[in-house]
Length: 383
Image (cartoon, rainbow, N blue to C red; front, side, top):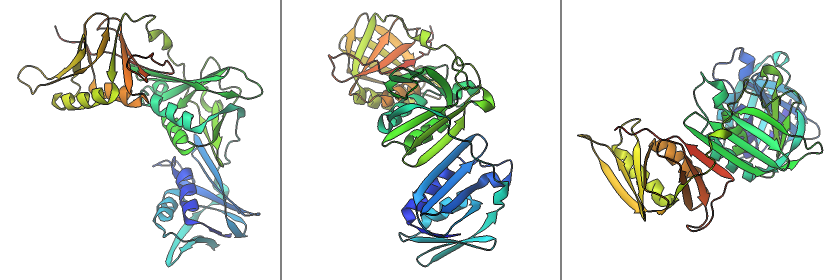
């Protein structure tokens, strides 16, 4: 095997395939990236850990076709560090030689015949605009749990219905829901799946341009349940393809958490509220809340009490309904505010002990959008 490729092309392709390699692979070959140089001038790179697979094809000047397996993380580190010149890669006996300018690296190969076959792409369901998809995923994954003892909550529920795709995530303390346009395939059937939040986030960032094709194995979407080893989701865009096993389990019925009506609401500037929360939270000890007291024309933010350090700040707010005082985990509140893409936020309340709902709006006196909703549980105040 011998081929030449541009440095940036190689670094980008290796970085994509190596991103999900396990830190402690159960077998050594799973730490490798498979390189396949084929005629006419295509270099294929693949990785697979029996859960997530990645595959990318790039243009290369192939002198001798062949395939080889090398350490993925090491090759990624080398590719990133190379000077900005064309790269030559060749197989010499049991080693791969990487040459770029005056730099030369030699890597040991792994037994390529022991490498598992990548899963095939499931059935294509449709496609979604890459930039919209990336933005939506970023808004939702902030609410996904990081507690691996509750694997179902570490996933994002993906629901496809007609010309809409909906993403949901919750960690029991907040819930994020985003709906976006969807181009259904020829079947047009409704589907749902539970995808790992980390995998979905990486895919969205890497495929944030053009159209992202979404595929799902037929036996995966049973009442929205990922069925262990048989449920598979796939994404493809710009020559990149990835598949992932779905999260196994039944996702909680979280939509009922949204209140049917909210008699109290307040509209606040997002940048002003973000900065105020950050400042006031400086005196809040770990896991201590920030209190927000809404009255006509303003909201007062407070943190700390008793003999501890204290802080307060008042900013402008447009209140509709009765005065209300409510407390939130400051980081959870900031996550919701920073996920908004609008200059104003509407906070909707029922009572101080019930969840609040954050939605965005373009103007202070305008209507809020329901494309993205962030529900946040309050912290119960003492006394």
